[in-house]
Structure formats: structure tokens, C-alpha cells
Image (cartoon, rainbow, N blue to C red; front, side):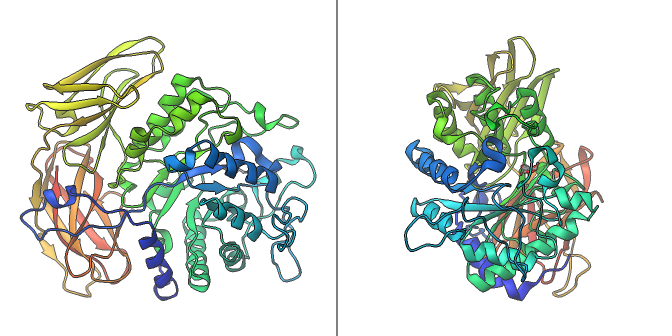
Length: 547
Ligand code: GLA
């Protein structure tokens, strides 16, 4: 993969800095023997709303205005939700003689007197005026998804951005959008290579950012085709992105049914969660996307909505709501705005939960490493049809199993106190118990590279041999230096498996650290980790610390 480093560099830096969140103390703790790493910026998973699940091709200016207003009025904005994303259906697929997108002036009229009908900048200004951010949608192929839903009738959009990447992404940025979701219906039909197309789009986005000073957050939507978790993180040098890992949770629209009749299923939601677990790819701003949430839509009850929210937070998934915000019930709103659960999703390490125990079929213990040393989010998940008791042991979380830990129930807010080595709960059928556990971190083992490339050498950056791991997914802190103003990239291969692309943000002249969870294909003392440059120049990898 090549990167157009110079055209997008300034815009990339601005976007990266704009989403500042400081990497907390944990980064300093494990590497005490090395230079203390500096704080590193981490873009957190996006939070917002999307039009598709509830409005599909009926989306227009009135819908978006009412949803944006509802995001503020319901307190969702206060809870951290920001994006109002316009999905497919906003554009009829018409272009003018120069290939520019022609917007339907009736669907997108002027909102203030001085504006003109048919200009998407109007709705963006409206959204921004409420202190929110605006998202837009297109397809990577020549056709859009509407092509494949002829039952939806005339006027349904039927074109994508292929052949117009430069023009369309520049247009989106000029209109002032902050976010773009790029679908794959046309790409799939033409049998295009998603890694190639999305890299091209990422470069078009970078050039549009350079021209306008306005960076579009990149949401890749190719439903997991060709394993995007292996190529999507940072594709084309993007400073942050998300990639869909599976199909839609809600069933496709059936002809002649109303959007409001679309039903979400609990099993469908669980399936998307499972398909979205690729912890080795998720780090520092790059997130697996198990799809927009169906929380609050018909089909799930309150308890199941809480399980859904818990799972997305554990996953560190984008929290993009698909329900009609103007119709959310009180219980749904309480679930969507639980600050403790949101903080698990938005944790600065950006890691994904890992299943650490399955004491019986359908009874599972999930653990997510949080940024405060010794802290984990834990989910006791019961997928079965009857209530069951589930136990989590501190040792399973990578904590010191012989020391006590403090636990809090995140949904009830109940302080469970200091607990000796485990916690057991009776979990209702298809229910979950979500905890924050604070215990004693076990001491990580630090490794120095056994071979380091000379500056400029592109064959290898650093190799670590005889690395021991007790876990299938082992958390690894990578201590490095990147004196550039932009991200440097490297690929990590564990025991020669498929490489994972990792972003190394600028550190200034000091050091920094990123956390990833390496996928070990075998337990034991003899693993090999090899970092190779994804581009030139590569980051200087100084050491790793393995839990
Ligand atoms: C695909 C995507 C959905 C939605 C629709 C629009 O199915 O996965 O999220 O954008 O297209 O047609």
C-alpha cells in the first residue's frame, strides 16, 4: 500500500490533534526501565446517530433537523453523542454535465432565507449550529445499494462514487461534512478489490482535507468482505477509521413495509457482536464496527437493550444509534446515556474485549483492559434460555489472582466492595452483568529487540524472540519514538501469521507507547514478534512489555 504522504500530511495532523485524548498513566507504568513514554493522542470510537435503520430512503432535511434537535433535547448530546449521519437515500444519483452530484432541492431545501435549495451545506450548517457533527454516505462502486432493491420504486438512489472519488469527497468536505460512510454494493457487484478501492478513497479524502482544511472521518462499510481488519486500520494513511465486519443487523427493507416495521432481533445483534471481535486489529483510533445499534428499535426489550449497549461498549465499537431519536422511551434513553458504560466504550486505550472464560456453553466471561492500571470492564453474559450462575476470577483478567479487587456493577451502580479472588452472579436468561473491576496488575515482562534495522533500512524494524504468553490474546505495550509530525506505520507479525497494521502517532523527541492485543497462536515461551515498516520512515521500536 502506498501513501500520498505530502498532500494529506497537514490535514492528517490537524484531524489527529482535533480528536485529542490523552493516553493515561498506564502507558508510563509498564516501561519504567525504559524512557518514560509521553502521552499519545487517541481518537475514540465515534458516537452518534444514522438515518438508515429507521428512515432508509425517506431521509430528507426535515428528518435530519428533527433528529438533530432530538439528540440535543434527549440529553444524548450531553452524554457524548455527536454525529448526525445521513445514510443512503439522500441523493437520487443524478449528476450534471461536469459529473457533480445534483441534490434534490425539494428534499434538501434552504433552512435559512439566505441559503439556496438543493445545497447540502445548509443541513451541515444546521447540524453544526446545534454543536453536533454531520455525516454523509456514498458507495465505492459505480452503483449504490438501491440498485438491488428495485421494489423500492422509482426515485430510489442508484449511483455510487466510482469514477468520481476526487470530485465527490472534495464536495463532501466543501459542504462541511465531518464523516463519510462508504458502502460496498456497487463494489461487490463489480467484484472490485476492497483494499484497493478503499485505499484510493482514503487518498481522495486526504487530498480533499488538504484542499479544504476539513477532514472526513472514514467509515468503511464492506461487511467484512476480504477481512478488512487485516487491511483497513489506517488505510491510505487515515489518522482514524472504522470498518464494518459483518452484514446489517436489521433485516433488509421489504417492499411496501414501513421503516418503523423493521424489526431487530436479539440473536442478530449477538451474531454481529461475535463477528466483530478482532482484537488484534483494534488500537489507538482504529475500530472494528459491528454495525449501527438497533437499541431502541422494535424487537428488543429493555433488558436486551442493556445487553446490546454492554456488548458494544465492551467491544469499543462506534456507538451509532439507528432508532428514531424523537421516539425513544425513557428506559431506552437511560440505557443509551449511562455514563459509566459509555466510559468503557470510550476508554482511551481503545482496546477490544476478549472472551477469557466460557465455563459452560453459552455462559461467557468477557474482559476489556481499561486505561487505569489494574482496571478491567467485565461482562458476564448468559446466552442461554435459563438463569445461570457465572463466576469471574481475577486471574482470568490478567490481574494478580491472589490479591483482592474492588468491583462495581455498572448498570445498578452498586458498589460490590473488595472481593477476594472472584465474583459470582446469577445472570438471567439472555442477560448480562457488567462490572468495573479494579485489582492488582501483574508485572509485565519487558523485551528488547534482538535485531534493529539501521535507519532507512526497510526490511525489518525490530524482532522480539522467545516472547512468553499465557493468553490467546496478550496485551502488549509497544514503546517507540516517532519524531515526525505525522503518524508512522509498522506491521506486526506474530509467529509469521497475517500481519496487523499499527499506527504510531508523533511522540516529539521523547518516547511514546501504543497498546495492542497480539493474537498468539500458541501458549508458551517461544513466540516471535516481528515489526516491519509499512511505509518509510518507520517508527523506532524500542521495547515491548507483555502481560
Ligand atoms: C448496506 C449497509 C447499510 C446501509 C444500506 C443502505 O446494507 O450495510 O448500513 O447503509 O446499505 O442501502
